[in-house]
Length: 196
Image (cartoon, rainbow, N blue to C red; front, side, top):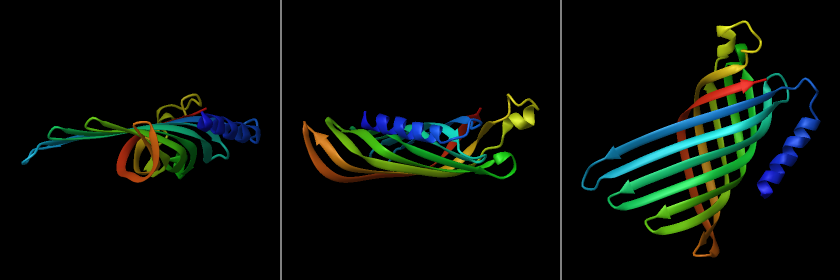
């Protein structure tokens, strides 16, 4: 709830300081990967990540806003199931450059990261913070498909991303304690961005 309030406050400050012509954009990233190995002990891993952001056009090529993300890391080795599911919320910044703003870099600092980790029958609640950065090629498909201004501003492309989460506390059996867990991932993603 605290993060939602901070996000709303940040969004209001940004929007009140912008000129009336400022635009709004919606950004989405998605990634999925699954693999299996069979040696002396069979193992299977599945990773999913998605993130959505609401952004305000601060300048013609710089955007700022609020982001929500969800990630899932599951590894099954033999009969042991290790599954981590995390939710992230934080401030997003994005900068586009080049012809038709086809090249984009972004960064998100998640002031709140909450996760549930299951290892066999043991369930832990984790809290901390995280960040994700990335760069990619996202051409304006609307510009190439039509001359209509209503279609322009539709970008789709590929990104290379780095995600890092640091967990500082956990709750196990109702008892809260300090921890030092880290989870990171380098991954590609498909991106869709639409501005208005």
